[in-house]
Length: 165
Image (tube, rainbow, N blue to C red; front, side, top):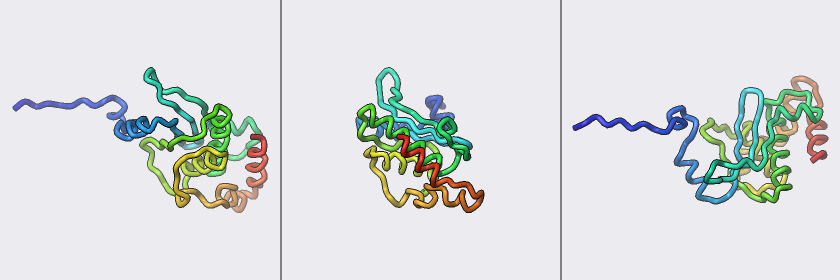
């Protein structure tokens, strides 16, 4: 008997890609709503499969909110909501009407930033299969918890930015 060792793909070894899950996404034939979070930002992209490499249709990073009069942290739930909202509006302009959610290998927490971005995309009009239970409460999406803590009027800023798109 010989000792055979299987060497997995580099991204699998690094824990960055779940290839079984990716194959399921690709079999659907729909674009993917890819949501990734960092400590200070939420990145939302609409990605389409291409044999030569995935094609990014549109993307929006919550740090880009700073360019449109957002002076609050970009690593919170209202910023993630707006990132999803704006990315979906850009996708709708490019005739992408539906997508499936791709959260990758991140730990998912109901009512967290990842699902706030999904809620933003759904509110913008993108058709994505979802469960309402996972969405954050409306008060958190509009920043009531930040208002109570810091006294900053987040709700008005969220509504102002949504109205621009």
